[in-house]
Image 1 (cartoon, rainbow, N blue to C red):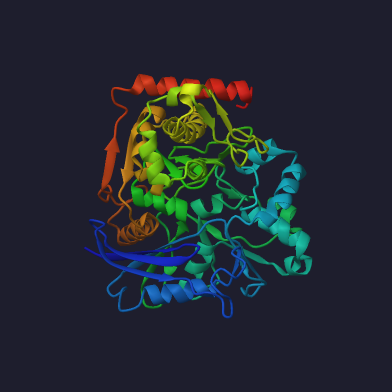
Image 2: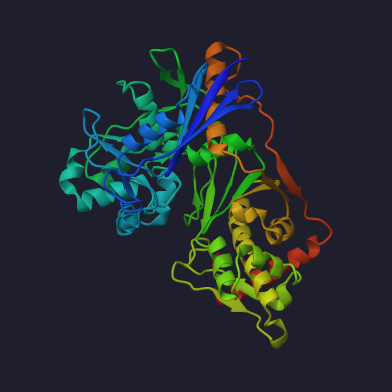
Length: 483
């Protein structure tokens, strides 16, 4: 028996879980928000620039009170899409760039053109640059802060940097496949860096971390604490949920995302798929939509209610919403690639113009948009046998009633938990077991599946597939050839 810890440094806080290596049982937990910059009111600082020392301060606070006593290994999960530009001595040349920084949109578009279009990037790294990716942030820096850009010698992500700090800033710098695959200059298909793409964005090459295997250790502290490779939050959450081949995750935020575990890298010629690697040695292709819960919130505001009230209204209608179909492209759309589209409400008749039918159409439109994303993965050979539904909206009865029939699979709604931190702890247990000779480097430790509600397609499956076909017919009429 041993004890390991997993820490998740998100955009706003640090969470730590201390777990039993054999059972995965959570023994202790810690939490601390990232401190606000001195002199800045809450929310006053640029949300896309930060001093990473704040991450260390909240880590120290979250780990206070002897939380890590007896811990033998630590795994680190951290926010994705972060860029820490360092000089040759390892000092930051400017604050870290994090999050979906829309200042990089023009730079991302220029990068796409510079490599001959979307297909060139898909061939190179399995994804098309967007403003959140480090490669676009580099291009933005080169354009807007050229003097700063010229000083950049080393590139790291948030989890790379935190692991490096925990180890005492050694000469060796490391990352993992999952984190590397989100940069825009590492190929999940070949497992190699593309320093030429760093040069394309930045104007010169920079040192990149060594990419570790899933069960490798980044190092050991002078006190003997093993630090595992670490990974990005998405990959850590997948490990914490215990996902395997045949599993997909549909994340319901304002926008949506669909990802699935697959045995090989997956790409799509138009760039609809972002080809990521996971933290277990497999792959984690992702398809994003621009609209998910924002369509529900917009409809709820129109009807003068909230999400719970909208769900109650929707359940007063029936599958098909009395002929109403909502194409929820309120912010344009990424899947299908319709950046300038608007939402469309189709099928209005006098007897369908009722609040409950509009509410039902909003839920069906949101979910059908996500089925479009699932179908992109299926069309590339990804098998999907069950879907994990994440996000607060996954708890809404109207979502749970419609999702199994529209997705055509079993739907699992896990109980709320710190899955990224749990995944980081599981990675730590894996690296510790390999170091001790008790675990294989090819198979992570088996921890019990999380508590969850499970929903099956049921007797109304045929009716829900009719709803799906109605949605497809409307989409093809309004946006012919969108896919």
